[in-house]
Image (spheres, rainbow, N blue to C red):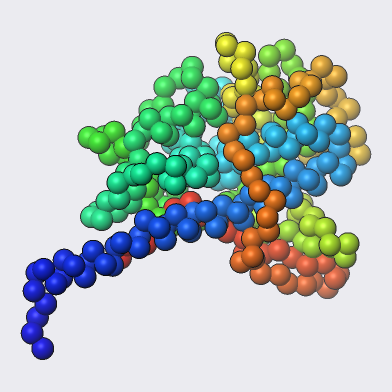
Length: 293
């Protein structure tokens, strides 16, 4: 058989890659349901043993990408690792279905992925971490993925890949201090949730606890993350006993960037343990990754 001509080879390559964009978006949207579901369960669970449920639910959603990859500690935003801040901003962009809201060019040569201008990432950077400091753009290397910064194009190259979150946040306590909100946050693994005999999903024991400080910007609208520190476990019997009674009265005073759904991810596998509870396993949060090959 004769070798393929250059034209035949080029046409075959086009057919191969034409599915990359829609398939990639499908992976991202379907996988996002998994994490959104667990965030819903975490927020719902905290209502069962604490007060201030509406605010805690909003804060939990806001912190989803902040906590997902086991955040490093910092006492002030100026001391934070820029790679971490950029990583969170990119994941927030992806979780907000950013790739489906605009038409982005797709690079079919190395590095392969969607070409996203840094201005689109900067929006979420400022939403989460304030505008006091400008982002210092650089390549972000995570566990199983890389977001390449193209300085010439002032863009990130975002590949398609399925990545599980390390932690799901659950806000346990809220304390108002001046223009700051102090949150005690449980970090829950994404693969140890159980379905009890009453048909309710229950969260696993927290792996670690964080003290996250939200600060109000100068314009008085919303809050941003200004510090992440280690914390002791909250007093579950009375988790809010140290909290101020002058907390914000409505969730509208808090600027949230994510909207979640309570739909259960149909791809999750269930297994039953010896107690009769059913564990929810295999829930995947993707954002992005390689479909071209």
